[in-house]
Every structure is written in C-alpha cells, then in structure tokens.
Image (cartoon, rainbow, N blue to C red; front, side):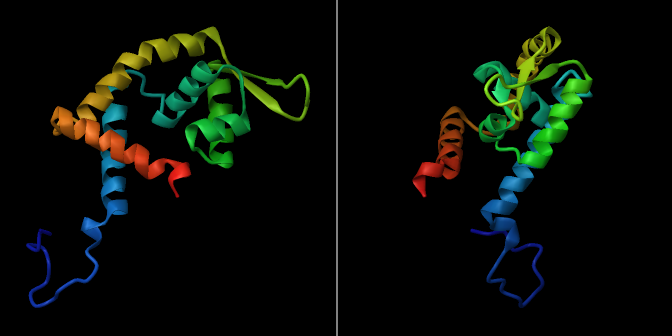
Length: 154
C-alpha cells in the first residue's frame, strides 16, 4: 500500500510519482552511482568510463558503434568518454583497416591494469547497492531488470 503520510489532507493522488518505476529506478541508479564514487578506489574514474573500459576488455578492440551497443551509452557521450580515456592513456584510437573513417578503440596496458584493479571495488559496489536485499531478492531483482531491458521482449 502506498505511503500517504506526505500527501495533503483530502487530496487523493491518481498519480503518485514516488511509486512509479521510473522514479524508483532513477533513485536506485543515483544511489548506485554515489556508492560507486565512494568505493571505486580511483576518484577520476566514473562508472560509465569503467563500463566502457570493461566493454573493450570483454569484446576486444571495438568501434564506437560497438561500444554504444555494448554500453547503452549514446554517441555524443561515448565520444566524450573515449576522448577522456585516451587523454589519460587508458585507451588508444586507430583507424579500422577496412574503413579508415571508422575508429577502433583498444585498451592500453595501463587501461588493462586499471580494469583489473577496479574490478574488486566494482564488485563491492554491487554488494553495497543490493545490501538491503536477501539472496532471493537479489536474484529476482537482476532477473527483472534484465527482463525490463531485453530489447527482444517488446
């Protein structure tokens, strides 16, 4: 049952934004991002930069369009992320062999090392994010989130 303690007396809201999935997902995401920044061990690394590095590690040298697909980050944002990671010496950019207009992103040794060093912290972030959930709730949450984002289910 929705909590009504903060509602104005006599007003029955047909739409309680506090109980909507988008609002709750946004709050959960903000909590996760705060936990990430507090626990990542590298104050210059954002969560989106880390997943970009992980995507390159997992998929190998990748084009920007492949990174967009792997990370669900839009094109303008991924370009900025790639520029910042390149400036820090964590990735290299080279033209594709078949199509010189396409840029291929690869990890540098420093990028590989940063991913290895950050992974234990990222696992701790996940643990802290789900700390209020019991094991069954954790499995259910991950299952439901995957189901919500599965593009083949629409």
